[in-house]
Structure formats: C-alpha cells, structure tokens
Length: 115
Image (cartoon, rainbow, N blue to C red; front, side, top):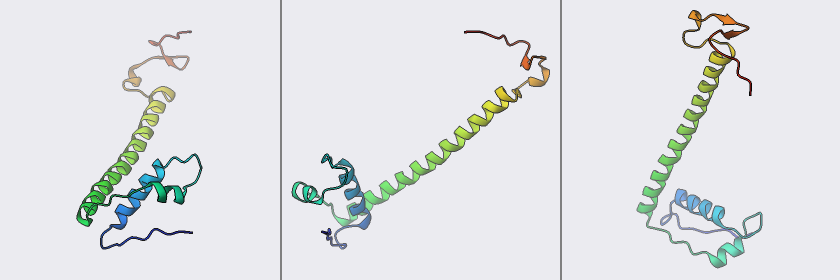
C-alpha cells in the first residue's frame, strides 16, 4: 500500500481532499476501483499557494452548505405539494369547497371525462 505524503504547511487538508476527490471521480480507467499506479504515473497535481487553497476551500464549503440547504428546502416543498394535492383532490377540500354541491363524491360542476 502506498501513501500520499503532503506538506501541510503548503497544502490545506480540505484542498487535498477536494482535489483528490475530483481526480478520483474523473479518473476513468475502465476498472471499478481507483488505480494508484495509473494515477501516480499520469497525474501531475498543480497545488496553488496555501492562502489561495484556503480561499477556494472556503468558497466550495459555502457552496456545499447552500446545496445541502436547498436540498432540504426542496424536500419540504415536495412534501407541501403532496399534502396540498391530497387536501384538494383526495379529501376534496379545495378553496371554496364549502360553497360547492357534490354529486357522487365530486363537485357537480365538474364533468367526468372519459379518454
């Protein structure tokens, strides 16, 4: 087993993680697992200065947080949409339903269309 040695005075741990993660995802060798020798022989890493790495890591971390927040928002919106659908079209409690006359479980103004 070979290890990747780095100088943490010149490289941010977050930058190393992000760089290697991106490389592994984009390393297409036709084999289902990562091949270190192919990586070692064909890959040159251009590592920016530590200050630049820290800025990049901060920006990417902020975007990751935004993405996670948006995923949670989307999940909540999907649940709300499902509940509104059930309320309006399953329970028949849509806006103005109290003023409607129902016939066979449907508002009488609605027509049954057959395809």
